[in-house]
Each structure stands twice: as structure tokens, then as C-alpha cells.
Image (cartoon, rainbow, N blue to C red; front, side, top):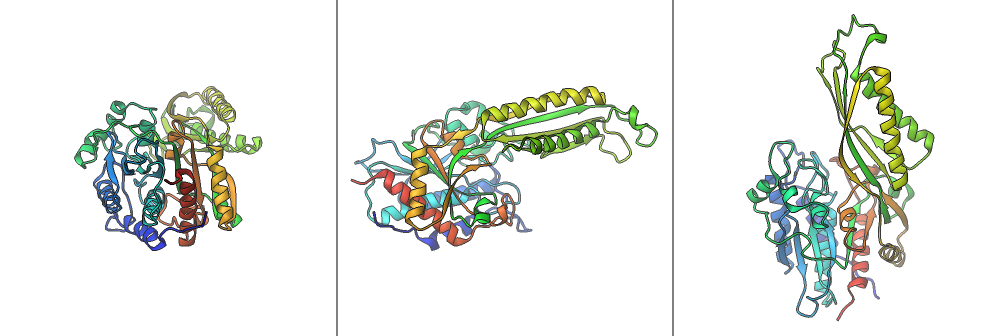
Length: 412
């Protein structure tokens, strides 16, 4: 099959254009799910979808779809491509958005070349992938895959007290079709790596073969507030000290185990939060990840045992709330091999790799063969305005996606 290429100027131009939607007066980019900025970004995406001559559908959880089908292939299960366009606070312009815009670009390129695919192709933009305003993250794709009911998801209360269903209705994206109305033949998600591996190795394409399992917990430690100057160290019930010990323990335990596990304490707050008062309460989150389910379970057990131990040693009470738990995901080996083959045919260095971040592909893998394509991130930085991927790498990833999709859909 001869190699073709996407329209590079259209791809990079749209990424930049979408990246200007949602900036505040200081220039920070924020498009949280269900916000006015989210509506503006969705409106721009839908306009592009319509310009491409695709049918637009919005399901009840607000997932947006652009569907390319005709009478000759309408009975076939579609190839679904996509990601998300919601962002974190003070975000970069590539995370999620690149995958959605590149998916649309692939469809437009095939249409312009007169390809008649044997099955429909769909671009998807899933709701609330980031989970900044509404929890859990990857909510739209989780609902789409049947992992959470629509009613439960729509009733989700955000960090600002807003209700997701009400916000989707307010911005005009409370759709009418049921999530899961299209069962994909396969799903492919193109994404920036959000890590340093590809750039460090000088590798253009990551063929993502699996995705780490994720365990999120909120830990609350209750001690006794007392005077910081008059209370001897040995006579304290210090919730702050106990919390600090958890972070140090996780770091040292993983270093000793030499495993692929990672652990992060991402948020922490003390009460009464005064410089001269021993903390009576510490509340913090723990993010545990590992691509192996057995190791992830073992790490959860190790943490639970350690919390019991420090409760006794520090004279504090500890409670734990599970916030989210997703098992590791193995992607479809046939699609992974097709990604590698396309990279090889284009003279691009590739490697198989694990995704350390969660993605919508993690959820859609429950209902369809799935894989991901990664392209390099400069310095491994993401969720940050310094997030950057060189245009040549963006184009290379989209061209690989084009190749894989063209081979999978066939022609009539």
C-alpha cells in the first residue's frame, strides 16, 4: 500500500487554535469539563466535524462523536479514534486534544483521497477525562464502556458544588443517545507520551501495549493538637509527622523492591494548619500505580499494614477511603503490531511501551480491541503550559494512525 500523509498545516493549525480557547487574562489555559470554556472548545470541534461532512452525535454523558458512514458500510461496527478536549488547570495544548484533532484529520484525509471504507470511522471526544472538576477521571469513557451508570455519573457533584448533568445541559451538551450506542470494531488513541522515554531514546513512535493499574486512596490521620513549643517530642500524637512517614516509607519501599511501581502523595492538608500548633489532623491522597495487578495489590497491602503500624507507634487514628481503582490493561497485540509495522515502513524508530497515565483507551478496552500510539513529549513535561511536542513528531504520529486505520477499515 503506498504511503500517504495527513494535511500537516491543518493538523497543527487546529491544535494551536483549540489551544487558545479557554485562556484567562494571564494567558493560562483551562477547560474543565462542563464549563463555559468546555462549551467553547466543544463548539469549535463540532464545527470542524460538520465541515468534514460527518454526522454529529452527542450521548447522554456528553461524549461527542463525528461519524463517517454511508449506505454501503452502515451495518458494520466502526473503527473509533479519539481522546478528549477537557484540560487540567493551567494546561498545555496537546494532552487529549492532539488525539481528537488527529483522528478528525485522518478521516478528512481518507475522504479527500476518495477512499471508500468498508466500515464506518468515528472520531470521539470523551467527557471529563481529566477528572479535575468531576471525579472520577475518564468518566465519559467509563460510562460509555458500561463501567458506571449514566444516572450515577450525571449526579456527580464537582469540586465547586456543580452537578455534572446540570452543567452538561447548561452548556448544551446533554445528548439524547445512550452511551455505548456504537460498539467499536476497534479503538485507537493517539496521544503525547507525557513522559521522557521517547525523547530520551530518540524514538519517534511508542506502540503502547499496556497501561498501568491505578489505585487512589484518601488517608485521614487524627492526632491531638497541642503547643509546638511546650509539648516534648516523645509525648506528641502528631498527625503531620505520621503523614510524613507514609510518604517516606512508600519511596523507600519501592526503591528497595526495584519494581515498576510508582507512588505519589499529590495532596495534603493539615488542621488547624498553624505554624505553632501540632497538627491534629492530616488528610492526604495516595496514588499507586503498576502495570502488574499482583504487584499493585501487594503494594496496597504493604501500605495498609504500614498505616496500622504507624497508628500504633504515633498514637494516632487512621481511616482510609478508596477513591478509584482500575486494573492494568493489556492492549490488542494485533493493533500494536500494526503500529510497529507502520512506523517501520515510514522509517521511524519505534518501541513497545507501557502507559504510566490513565487514558480513555483504558476504558474502551473493556468493549473493543484497543491500542495507543505515543509521540515524544519535550522533557517529558505534561499538565503544564510548557507541554510541547515538535510538529514533525505530531505529523509522524498522525501519519502512523492514518496507515493503521486505512489497513483496518479496508475499502469497497
